[in-house]
Length: 103
Image (cartoon, rainbow, N blue to C red; front, top):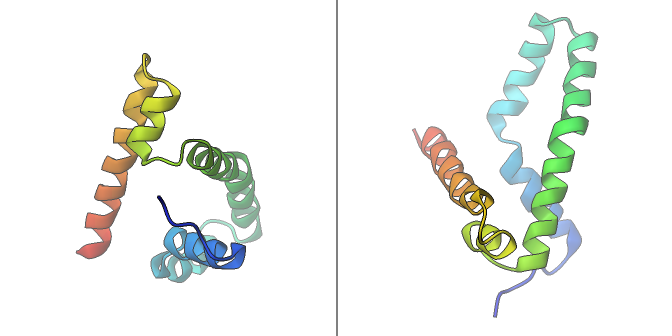
């Protein structure tokens, strides 16, 4: 049996902490200043809303429906299509990001 989060607030803080690193917090003001200030920030927020939020919602929905690992979830949802390889892609990208932060 898998464990579940004790509260929604704990889950939100854990998800935000894993998604937003200190590098993003330190780098964002510099990037905004170099690329147009408010115009850059507006376009950045629009991109987050149009691309990032739907992907996060899809990840949460797939995780809640299958209660499996990323590889197992996509194998369960689409066993006979090429979408089953998306789980491996997610694990590989997490490994690459982890290796970047550890160096």
